[in-house]
Length: 126
Image 1 (cartoon, rainbow, N blue to C red):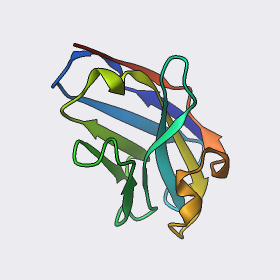
Image 2 (image 1 turned 180 degrees about the horizontal axis):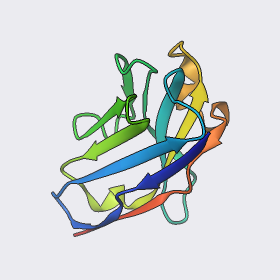
Image 3 (image 1 turned 45 degrees about the vertical axis):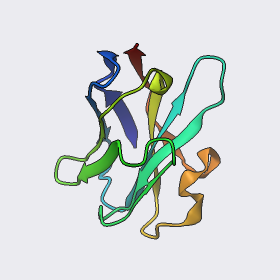
Image 4 (image 1 turned 90 degrees about the horizontal axis):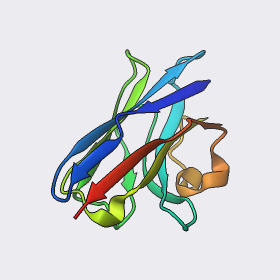
């Protein structure tokens, strides 16, 4: 599976962005998908994950209520809608996927995922 993240850019604090993660090479239907981010000088951290069906989601506390993950399996794409953006959301955002029909606890762990996109930069100005 090849993942291509897009949609990053520069936005003012309080604004919104929608990221996309398009998959190719294989259908994402049986894959759990997630988003991680890495801010300058910091380690990569979990942001959110979604089950293969889209019925289950998980969010880091720092983004809960502001970010929404979704997916369209017919388009082989996972989305991240980011609202009420803050300067501390500035980071490179990576999408990831692993074949799993169970929404297991490993979904928040970077090492659990087998496939990664190249990252897209989100910059939030104050």
